[in-house]
Image (cartoon, rainbow, N blue to C red; front, side):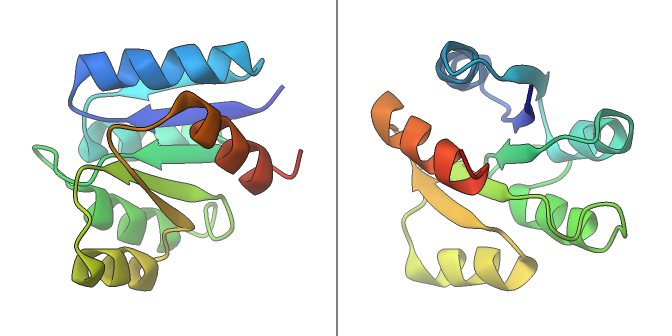
Length: 121
C-alpha cells in the first residue's frame, strides 16, 4: 500500500485530499506545515508528498528544497497543491524539485489521475 504525506495548513483541504486518497486505497499521514512534514518524512518514508505552497513556519517551496537536499528523498514525487497559478511561482517550484503543480480548488477525478500517474499505477 502506497503512503502519502499531505502537507497543508488548512484542515479542510487535508480532509478533502485524504478522502480522495483513501478512496484510492492509499495510506495517508497529515502535517499542518512544512516544518512538521520535514520532521515526519524520514520516519514515514512516503511514496508521495502533496504540499500546499503558502503555510506558516515553512512554505511548500522551502519544504521541497529541504526534501530534495536530503539523500533519502531525491526521487519521491512531490506535488504542490495551491491556489497560486502564477507561472513564476510554478517555475520556482519546478526549480526546487517539485514533480507537479495542481490548483485549488481541485477536482477529485483530476487528483486521482495525477496520483495514479506519479505513483506509476
